[in-house]
Length: 133
Image (cartoon, rainbow, N blue to C red; front, side):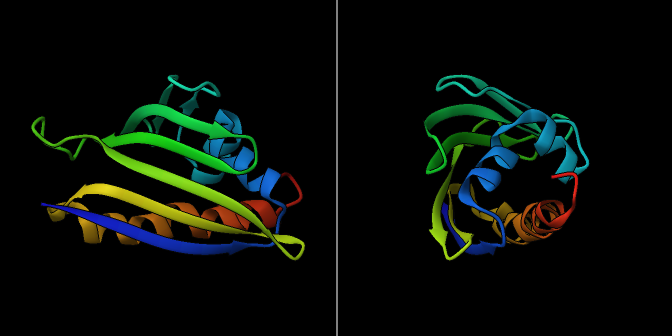
């Protein structure tokens, strides 16, 4: 079976800044502290976490939506790709990010649920608040 993870996160930065941090290879590497190579084109490759994560861009709408196929080295060969969706909306001067990670193998769901918080949302908030963002 598979699990769907849903999280909503608020950032004190405009949607464009959050969108760019997730889709720009240099910024993504900066906030996660791990090498990332992310195409900005639909169908382009995604690699993050020093190669732990890989996938493809399925849909990109500037400052609004990113959808990617996504798997990690923890996936079994028989596991289908999971899918991540980042939906950005303006909330005051900041951003409301609605995140959905679907088709997560059940055995990895709790680790991934906490991993998004620990390895993405917390460091992304800190990065966006830093003067170098």
